[in-house]
Figure (spheres, rainbow, N blue to C red):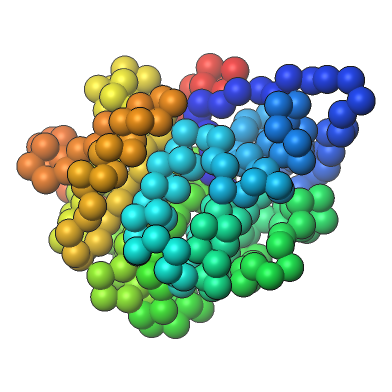
Length: 292
């Protein structure tokens, strides 16, 4: 499940749906009704925003990083073509719902370790009965190992535990598993979070460079300059990426993002080296001010 380092708390109103509060494996879960959008909810874990879901409009993506992952989904194949997608980290299943809404007949596998959270989301925010979404409660890497070779058009990694990406999901060995399940030319996208001095982000780019021929990074310019902690979306494939269209879409977002690729992205790594299982560490914890 993802952590959004930038979000807006919904306004409370009279006569509206009530919040749902429940303990899950990862902490205290809250489903807060969005007072501006009917049948829409924000999921928080221990007070930190995780996902936003609109049951009436699953194609609407509220969080900045999820919109950027939505752009990747939109550009992963011709418009409307069904995808085989794997989601590592489920949260409120926002992105799986988005794929089902924008690409009907897609087949999706979601791996979410927090079984209690999955039960809560299924009960309070039920999936469309026609959506081909299978949810497996397992560790992300263990769940990925069960996906057949060459099955996926798209793999999205959006896994956080205690606001940090687990170490075993940051290595070249992890990306070897991602490559195994991807079809030739398939796309991998990861939600990363880091702040100054951006050592984790630079290391993740170097790691992906060791396994994929083409990379792009989408982030707020202030994050890329090391001015603040925030999310960055890494996109990788062995085929050329739609950088021009991704750049246009990111620039037109409510919080405009910048796309780095090619030589500029290689220079950004600053000599960082690929991360292996033996040296991997979890991503840095965000400062307390991030989610206020």
